Length: 464
Image (cartoon, rainbow, N blue to C red; front, side, top):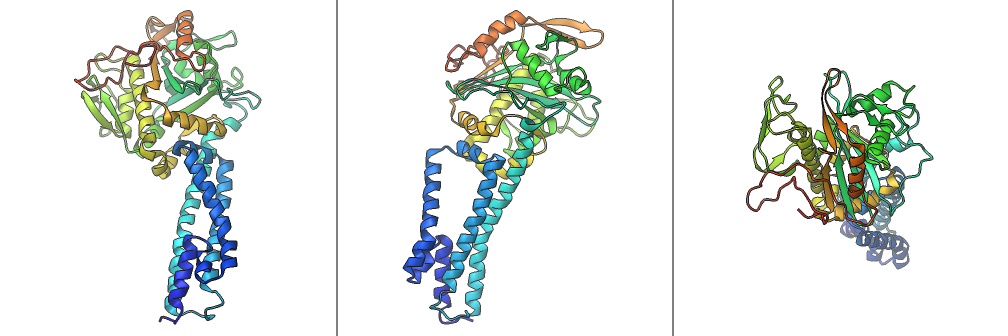
């Protein structure tokens, strides 16, 4: 039943739910209205200023570190308590009878639910984000075998290139060994706001390790071998692979990022799939059909044109290499296409924020990196704001690497020309502020009229 003052109580409580102090002002308690309202208005002003001066991607990256997220979670509790206190004070103001009617009590309950619910959701998302990013970025605090970065090692300055080794892991239940299926160096120039993506052939042999020794077997087995032999590689497999790729290119690799097949699939599906303009049709009869075919059925192919790929389809597009005219070189170029398309999908239309729950679920268990969390705001801002032609792609191929034939132990192998690779590397990774001059990717197939080729040779300006 309605009591005489129930409607006014509900209106006062609702006003304070919207803005602490507004209900007190409704009740003509001006001093209390200022006491409740000024802190709320100050907080709103600060939030508006922060949002107005930062891009969504930079803002998101600023708050995802475990420390920042912990502070925000604490602030969320304080704000919730302040809002609830303001609502209750406005509802139980002394000008009203001590007891309200049933309708007033029901109205108060609904208002409290409306106040608490968004804070509860924010707490759930924040707690998940805090745990997820603490897990993803655990690499920068790891010790012992497998630790990728020494605690005393200095990272690049904010005006220096940041070189990241991106490792795709071929890890499936039926494999006896974990292999690095794809190797890319992603180099970010914060001054020129450009990115160079260079793919490294996985079948390279006799790669220098940086300590005067070489690794005789294929490069894609180095990480697993080093992890199994800590007496030879006390710093672990990731560090050994970092050192080898850095020595090969003549640059320093600062950090790494690692993802396996299933993590990649979950990540692509979490953003709703990716789109790639396919310029060359192919069909691989020997493809294992992982995720795209019924169990035991082989084969997968794609037609020319703009294609939308699910996670498993994107994985197939990035893995196929035995179709007519395809090879490890063309596959590496397709892997770069997938990476660029994924970046575009994540950053489009505020997607980073709207897809947060599914992204966190996808990333938590399958992505590992040692990039310091305090570098994320700068990196995400560059990724979000850079022009499409600021991404330079290259695949190391002949004459930088040459076929070594068929080795009786390792199968098909490739051998690097270190001198040529390091000369090209100087143009791929120039000093900050200078535009890269990429080594050409595989020759493109002519695209349909008006459709841009997704695998192109680019000149010094980065323009196809």
